[in-house]
Image (cartoon, rainbow, N blue to C red):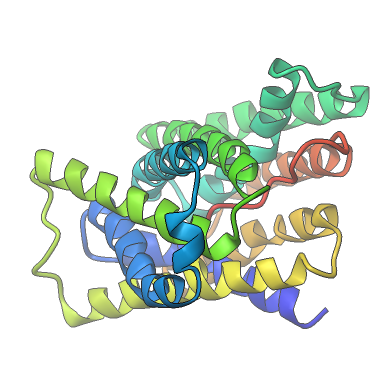
Length: 290
């Protein structure tokens, strides 16, 4: 009851901070993963060295694949915040449970009929939301589409990571996954000649806040809450990240979502809530990557 609201507040800062940082979007994504890895690595090497060295080839391969998918998630969602509003980008990327459910169906799991109603409502709401954004600012459609792709990559990351975490501790998995993601994003930045240094002190403080708030504090508290709370309840509660991010963006960035977009965003969250609450018992709950 106490930790979950703090976790939601922490992850809600992700979108606004990444949108506000005066640095290239890919550099922001890269540094949040690299800095998080730097913080976790000493603890992982000290307490989990035996587990890390004893991981099977399959566990390592899946972990590296998960890290690459996480990099693709950040490489699409972070730039989306520069084209569309934080509220729209966050709402759309939070649709990852929809894609997790579709992946589950494609891999042979039985998906209840109620889930299909939730998927239909969610996807219809996304269409309406993107239409509203496009009517107000044509380039916002690019951001909405990037957020949509980012949600798909986040779902793939969740599915692959869930398979690894059946046998590997959260710390060992996280340090290798974040490390892989950070390295992949660094290579992308170097190939694309994206500036990764020379930022102002304010920007570095925002990157540190992003790393220690959304990426470390938020997810550490979520993992702690999951020990005693239903994953479904946690997943549903994390939908309030959309509300938190919208409020923070309104105060911190002066971004006020258009009134016409609010009904679509609300119906999108309702649809996602239906999908999350009706997921098959043998399918891993979808916990946000951000």
